[in-house]
Amino acid sequence: MIERRHRPAIESLLQRHPAVALLGPRQSGKTTLALEIGESRPSIYLDLEAPSDLAKLAEPELYLAAHEDKLVILDEVQRVPDLFKVLRGLIDAGRRRGHRAGRFLLLGSASIDLLKQSSETLAGRIAYSELTPFDAFEVVKTVADMDRHWLRGGFPDSFLAPNDRDSAEWREAFIRTYLERDIPQLGPRVPAETLRRFWTMLAHEQGCLLNAARIGQGLGVNGHTVARYLDLLVDLLLVRRLTPWMSNTGKRMVKSPRVFVRDSGLVHALLGLETLDDLLGHPVAGSSWEGYAIENLLSAAPSNAQAGFYRTSAGAEIDLVLSMGPGRLWAIEIKRSLSPQPSKGFWSACDDIKPDARFVVYPGAERYPLKGGAEVIGLTEILQAVIHRR
Image (cartoon, rainbow, N blue to C red; front, side):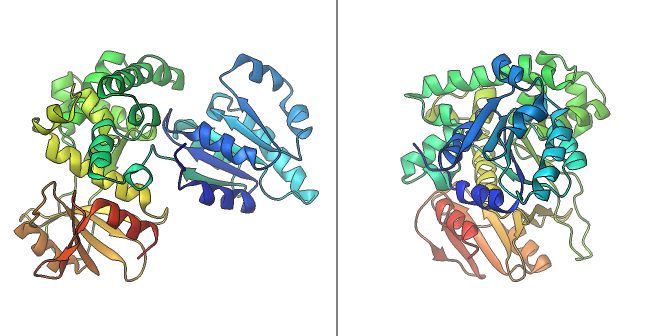
């Protein structure tokens, strides 16, 4: 069993809030973590996709009121939208009797409906936490671990598969299930083949600036439809839209976002890359590793951190600008090289925004300074620095 570093934070939220929503894509480990938390206290677990558990909630107020002394874990809670009003009533009634925290742990595999419903109905009563698939801090101890994590991604069943072929087959089944079952259940009527082509195009252009018109031309749809498809995958926590970092530098800034498929294993599955040799020989390798590093850094960053990329029309560029509070504005360049050298555009961009620290992240383990005030640092070491806010 791999210990999830998110557990203490979720347990802390349960001590302070009556309801906590744990959000993340399917198969990212939410249920396993919730059941582990439930073992430490009286609890009940209901899977709202299971007919037997749904039947227990035919009269939800009566059933849940009978378990007021337990932590109630509700999995796939967005499947029963009417339940949020019931939860609000139970939370308010419990507060009047002195039960103020740790009542409900809500698990959702998409943010589309869950956030909309809970923010309206449970305002002031709920806290949110996102559980990503395994990040590098949790599973990477050696260079071989990092290569496996980068190739297979962080979904537990993919990362822990006996071999690369089994991992690739799992990810292909995961993609197909999302396209053919999960997305239609959420409401959007998008042909599965069209959405797969769109998702694959994003994988081919991992980390590129979004050009909706060009993608739409390839799909035979207009730019507004492309934006709708992108919103869907972002809301499903499968794609990240990294926005430009805006600062008062007086420079002409790039305004389009960069788009990343969040899990590197899904990038490689969409492109048919099964082994590390396949990946290293493919043009996407550099941008895939950049996306892998960025996703891990943002997973480790505090929830109130601000992130973006910096790029001007004159060529000044920083892969990731990360602000974690006063005195912690970091400029991060990402290189998949054991002897990384930042570009001239990185130094120019640093002169523009004047960060508190400048890092060049690479796959190695040694940390050493560069001329100009930057440090070369391994991915796992900078993740530790981000997590501990150093």
